[in-house]
Image (cartoon, rainbow, N blue to C red; front, side, top):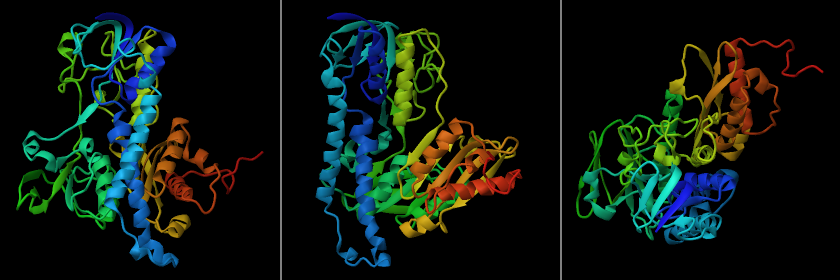
Length: 468
């Protein structure tokens, strides 16, 4: 069978489905192609099931402070692992079903949606492995990514886990090494430790959760190390251990564990796309070189979106890229301003990066405002008074440029700051905003007052109010 369309979208994940939704507004001639497991990475093996597991961990961990609050019997609480895993899987299935019900289930098989894998024959012709040929004026590549596992480790079989397998487990091991202390590894490492597993965390880097701000990174390491051991700064080797265990070694440290959970990154799914036939320039990983403001590959008729770009594996970024690619595939190509960067690690406390990162800023041109959660009233009441936040502002203009947050309700503080940075507000502008007492947001207020002093900002009046 052959089919001609205006736009073909390869990949039915978050970016592909978003792109398809935009394309359908402007043309009835389209095709969505995906031969893999449906339901999006976020809903199946990423954001959503991990948050379900994290919520269970936080609820159980709360028993540690019951005694301080006069609540008795907390020591009698325990976790039924089987039931907890069933809860996570039920939530996962619910989210996947919602995705499919609102997208794929509404499409006509082999007319609009093709459950097959595609390969480029040329820039405009796709050969599907079910025998179909699709010719398209424009093509959007949104094929996602796959967890990276070193080839040498694959020999250890099902003792090696990634997030693709983790959320399918019916039971958990007693001991596990989480290799990679980025966002996913840190979230799941802390979660499994709170679920009662013997967890060890490893990373070649000296950072956790992607933290580049050295002071906050050290505070985070000190905090997480109280829940499970962290071995940072050395390459990790895995070998057969005693019995059926695996021996994980980093520097002078070795631990024997039942399983390893590999969280060292994801690889873009481009290997079998035949991109060498598409006439576009590729980077060293085989990913099309593209303009992030148009999502167009060079001057071609091909666009990319989502995790396959190998840039920001975050759902809202994938959706933004899908929207841009979908629009430009149906219009004259236009450049769009990207939104203020925002990433959240749902550890406890949260780790949040917003706006310009610490490593991207010229330290000679900024000042850093410090807000500490330790003495903050609301945090003390919640027994979550851990962490610190840094807000970065331009010395000349006072404009807020970015922030690094390690603290309670960081996900909320990050959003507030992202909106402020998007509006190009200054420290003075933010201090004119209301801050309620007692709230976690007062931690931000403290950081802003600290910035005001360091920047030498003076008001015409001794209070942050605008005269009528």
